[in-house]
Amino acid sequence: MDADAMAAYVVDGFEGVVEVRASGDSFFMYDPRDQPDDRRFPFATIVTGDRYDQVSELDRPSAYRLNIGLPKAEYVARFGAPPSRRDGAGPLEQSFDYTAMDQVMPHPVYGAQYWVCVLNPGEHTLGLVQELLTVAHAFAVRKHENRHSHAE
Image (cartoon, one colour):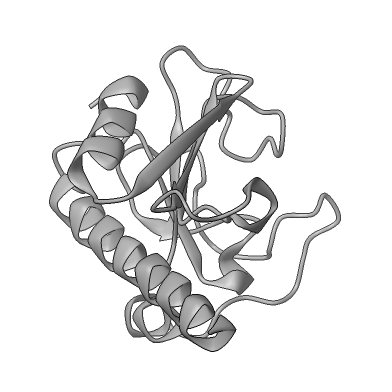
């Protein structure tokens, strides 16, 4: 699945999703059109280049990284405690090959905030990616509902 097909899957497959594109990247927010722009926060992103970090070598042809923000319990159940130490270049110290395609792993920079990533989801990870996106979207919906119930 290429980046455009993945973006279409997220927008079309989940209720209330708004996609914002910038510099070839996509940011997916749950927003049933009642949030000001400055209150939106993505539950998933697609990054297509090395503008933010270089550990995944996203400047390769057709390479992209899908990033998914998970609830703490979901992240910990799959990967254990999140990393906290950074190397000299900024990424978290972890033992993953962030250039490997079709492998779900903690995010190289935002793993400590319970984000995971996968380069070019495919045959080995597509089912898991769909499951994780469902969890992340449901988490975004809950956070939105909690904000609105506390504001009333």
